[in-house]
Length: 136
Image (cartoon, rainbow, N blue to C red; front, side, top):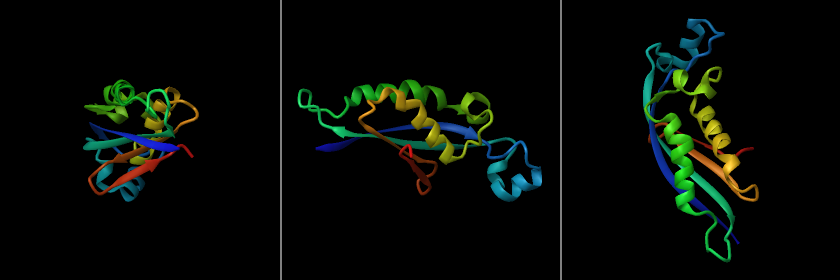
């Protein structure tokens, strides 16, 4: 029987949506106020879910304390109170859209989750705007 275990977390980050290879006019047309050269911030809400078989010995799919520690170490410490464009190496040449942030988070956590378990990232950029990434 497969069960999904989820852990919520949050981080506050600033970013600017733009492409270095586009003109300022094109960046403004595509990204609007999110292209602010002085950046803008979000209070991101994150849900990390792991789906797998329940271990008959422990009763866990994954120990939530381990999942919590992984999120703290690899996501919150990396992203919280940071400028994603300037402070997070993954975004040096990658536009820090919600979609790309979710993919980066998935890639950072995937090596620490058993390969026979599924990993899903849900990232809320605002209470009404969110993305989901399952690694496919």
